[in-house]
View 1 (cartoon, helix red, strand yellow):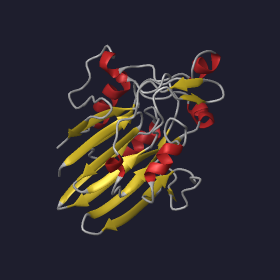
View 2 (cartoon, one colour):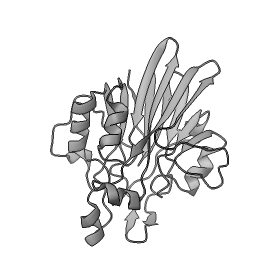
View 3 (cartoon, helix red, strand yellow):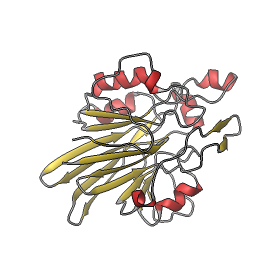
Length: 255
């Protein structure tokens, strides 16, 4: 199955898997935008790289959670009338289907194949209790059976490696894992120290590879906002061969 993946920046990407077109977490604010999270602020450091055609014909969107660095008003507009999966009800998007952790939706796309979408818990901190306060969301396992082939991919959302992730993935053969990285923190000061990192870092990527053996890993959610503290180009460790590092606007063919 031919898989093309485009990273638009931040947590936003578009993938074409054998004619099935999926996108994730549309945050399309301009470079220099300041996002206010009440306890800290974050600046967008680079521009999203996309064309209007990137968002045409999307079969469905995956929304991991509704923090502003994952969905904004420009992103909402770009979604149009596409189908949406979300952990919560989305304002102004009445057609969105809410999936809670552990819930599954299965449907057939005419002429394309059968798709199964399963919501996986995403713990948004190294401290599970604080993760709930910060705002946990969904990861997703998507299984697409089309043209006599099965393609399985996993989207972590903003999550650290945790028991719920392990239970969901331990028996899966993962063709592609899209991992939210960047070693994000909650700004500066006491809150940041108490919460610790709220997304994966390069060491977590290497650990994920050892635990789950995906055929390919694409790290996203790094370098885009100022509270993402780790640049994976300068991670200081040798990343597994499965890892494909991209820049915003890049498109890669995976298989």
